[in-house]
Length: 501
Image: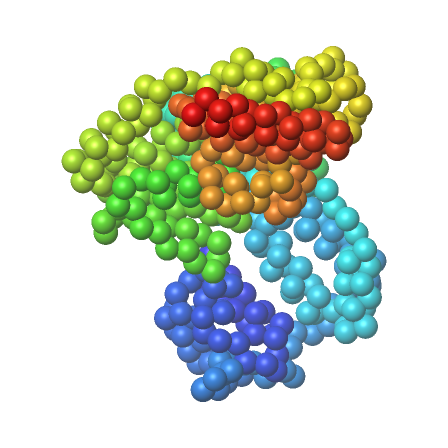
């Protein structure tokens, strides 16, 4: 955030709470700066004549004179609701933070009665998601590059997961429900390109200002967006609407990796320390060297390999195996060589154990009384008791063609879905590197559906754990007579072992 914008945002934070004082640390968290920066900004505002005063002691902080305000803005409630709805819809897109500031300014500048009415109506709106989120650090860098029309050094990850570096002239943005794109002139390809923001892994601005270019002719397709003024009024010759490749296609972006998975993987590495902040960020170090930052707000991770190389991923779009490899590569670049070598040997020993297969799972599931494998969603097979819908307890992979499961390869390959898992909250908290869920299966803090990638489980101990989980899922669906049958079977096995002993 530029200093001018930050000073204005600081005044808005104080005005929103006036006349109550706000602590230095609270302001620092809200603006994502250090407390010392807040102190310097407060001093600058006071010197400029803004009536800010400080209160020492418990419950103290900075406050602004409540009568100091902006003139009323001549918006009625419905006009304000229209602006608020548009800004709220675009919060995950570039300039989303600017939109939040604009919303505050709008409400603060309106009459009290109209602002209250607008907020009451806005509270009754329910807005669906728009676009595909990118990491906040990338969004901020793209905003600044486009505003200044900078040439940037871009690290970009394509559909196959290959990362390339290139110089790009940052000219504009394409914002749609399919995703957000940086529209620029790629000097590597010597052509106009649209770069999906969630696939940008690094962006470093240069001092060079890009030459002016006309976006529609540069990309060879006409956007559906309406420019501020018609091209003819701006003295620009209209271009022919040629759609040689058209606007970018809808993004797919749900794998099995998330911030909890990254934290679990990092915590299992030797010699790693972590620090969590109130802003939802977790920083990881090996010794005194940082190698990873995980951000809950935008579900991203930033990796630092060595002393300078840094790149970010939107985790929901990267497979778990690739994310795990990125965490271990970043850690190995700062950890002691002997520690890295020991860890790699341990991973090799783990990989050498017998993998768990779908046949193993099928044998365990079908050994439970009354269990069979049959259709549970159309032609999709799963494990059930009888043929009733309410007795389904497990299946392989997410529903075929379903938009709600929406896992993408490779994380939907060779997976077991426990449709009923009483211990789900416990397992997600303790073993997020081996178990996960998706929004389709409900609140993760409650029992429900659990996804297990078989490739992340090896050996007899993991097989025994899966057997317990399958049995618990079966017990949650089984009628009392079958539960009693299993208990009698178990009791008979125990008596037989005692006689043989």
